[in-house]
Image 1 (tube, rainbow, N blue to C red):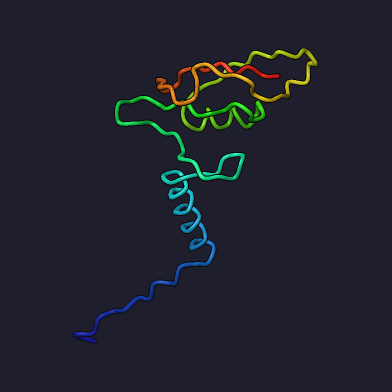
Image 2 (image 1 turned 60 degrees about the vertical axis):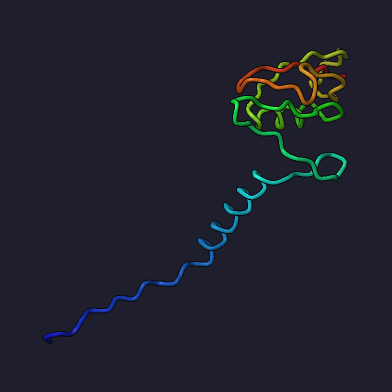
Length: 115
């Protein structure tokens, strides 16, 4: 047939793909916005600033596992000092160095004192 154009149909987006896109957008929004701390109040998520430094998050009062996760999520590594010798490897952060709000370099190690 002369002059006729072939039309192809593009299948609609699958539900799973749509959910994946929504999840990625939600995670991106959370990373750029705020998060809830252990008290349930909103707090700004520490992140890399324009000068290449990281604001050290407040980790005192968190479990050693939660504190390590938060430190790692902003680009810091962690060393632990355990005050109690029960050998469980579990505890609560009672002190940290550098202190909350201090500036640190990406990859810098912070000390968490665990009791």
